[in-house]
Image (cartoon, rainbow, N blue to C red; front, side, top):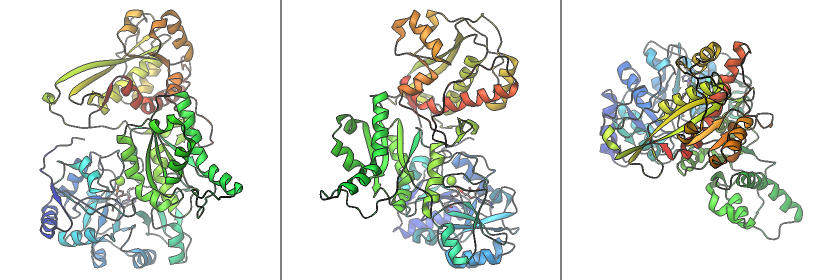
Length: 585
Ligand code: TXA
Ligand code: MG
């Protein structure tokens, strides 16, 4: 979607009553205004004005098939927005509004289809945040609002996050300080006889059960961390640019003072177990890649013990984001999105974050964290099934002082299958995730491109027809025009990074041209060199080996193409770094 930087965005400090009225006036006049809530910041527009609502999607850079939550400042507004307040809805409203909950009810004709995305229901939410209530009441209309992040980045929990994503794209941003809860509201479908949680949040199923004396259902069998099938869940929110690994915590140790020298041996053991998985994992990563930079989202216990361990590699290779006590899930939730954004900005190669067991608020925390980490389906990370995101940044051409080029070469056997698909996928990623600049100097643009060749290829052959079909099904677009090429040293020389589908081919190239050492990797040795290990839900290490589909059926080609897409999306940040570039956004 086109994002047009069309606004001189007004920034409003909450104590500035005049400013708040101005921002509310901008909204009721049909503009988009970002405002604080206790969960995350919202991107609001008049919910009764279709044209205004459409502008939300332009600012967010996401398509409009996801329903929006309608925000109110007074419960008396609900009646005209919905067809029916069921007994379940009434109890939820009485018990939890205002607060971090969204109640889904059948909508009235006042709600345009731009808000409900064609559904016959609408989500109503009354925040408990003081500035939010003041602002909403000044607007004088129901306010449709998704979270105020750019599509694909974590939800914003500070006005600064909103500014980073939305400056110039919205009419005003109201600053209301840090969002207290830090995770989006619990979305509950209250159209039936029992409440159904579509998205876990700070109002937990336990709280709802207790207040309503019912047994709340989750949409789908929701385990801690799994993804409920609410519309909109297919979008990849919450994801930072680098991989996130979840380090599951052993039994909690609340109340033990880990700094106490007088701890019993038993207690020391327990404390060690608590932070050991983080430290061991960090060690493992540094052992396999001494240059790795590791981000740890954790409690102060971890930094204390890392200091104590006195491994000099740690001090220079670990970036900490400390949210409070390791076992305090409220602090972890409150800081999660800020932590992901912060560590991502430090350009760490991987983020380690604690995993909780999954009760109460832990369910919501794990739900958001596992999305950031990407789930595993059939050994293929779920990112395989996501669309390759657009990064639609408009930059004037004259912005860059200079431009350099850098390129990746994929090498396979015949260059009619795997390498052609790899070339197609990475080319698409470069096109969609650009523009790029030099990682040394953001005033120098980077033009990244991709080539392929085969060790035993004949020149000028088209890709296998099934590879072409699978590519267009899985990735979109075509590789039909690709022509195979025989590998030779002049091709190697022209490329900055050479990746092969299998170890064997990388060995073969290095055998003939030892001077290329450091530039040639198989996909799996490349992963390993970055200290990247991807684990499946079952805890097994997922293999990056991609079998050659030649002679197999279409299903195999599709699976292969999905796997390539998934792995290249994961390797993408490493690849551009090795090319001397970073995303310009
Ligand atoms: O805490 C929050 O809920 C924040 C603040 C700004 O209020 N808003 C928010 O909005 O997170 P958004 O658009 O990022 O997420 C809304 C979620 C989506 O998963 C959407 O599919 C679901 O709520 N949703 C909204 N209306 C729905 C409906 N009628 N039926 C089912 N799901 C709905
Ligand atoms: Mg959102």
